[in-house]
Length: 127
Image (cartoon, rainbow, N blue to C red; front, side):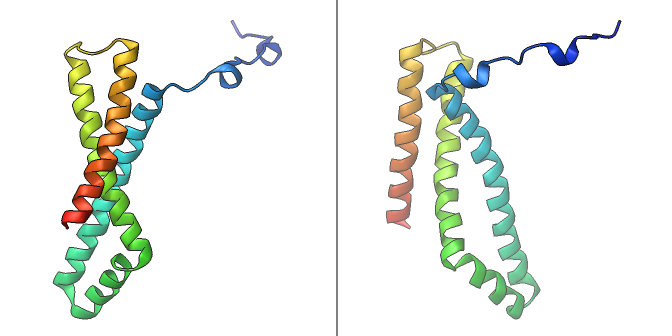
């Protein structure tokens, strides 16, 4: 039977009273970095394809990737790669039902964030 009071029901207040937790934010960020890495991978594939097609086309692709915007995208991609890797390790730990209490889960979240930033800086210094 159709609900005749569909428009008269109150909306759920979850958006106004819910405070995001570190574990939920890091989980969402894991999904975002995974999708961003796909885009970064496509840029690198485009760069390799341009190198195989012609010198003029490679110059275009190389100028895009070596511009300030391309450099920023590649640096953020290095961070996204480290973040996604460390968050994946955290999820593997959780898949084994380890370290799942609230305080330890938050510590793991901060470790993933700090570790990804530290590994990014180390990677950029080495390269």
